[in-house]
Length: 58
Image 1 (tube, rainbow, N blue to C red):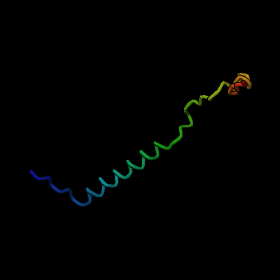
Image 2 (tube, rainbow, N blue to C red):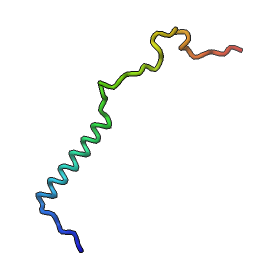
Image 3 (cartoon, helix red, strand yellow):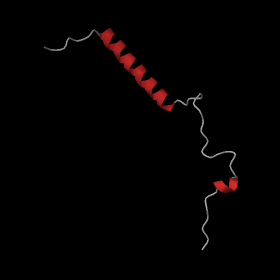
Image 4 (tube, helix red, strand yellow):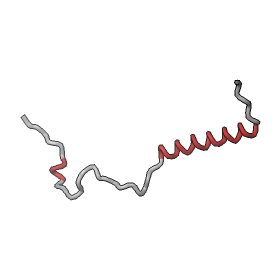
């Protein structure tokens, strides 16, 4: 049983919704959540010398 073709207006609406969804997904992928907790990479209260990479002297 062949598929029945949709009217042109319906195809345009579906295509428009697909494009909107694609743009929304792209925005979500690059959106920065300002409410997300920020975890610092180091402890800000730790000793700065302890954060240095050790240097091995031979």
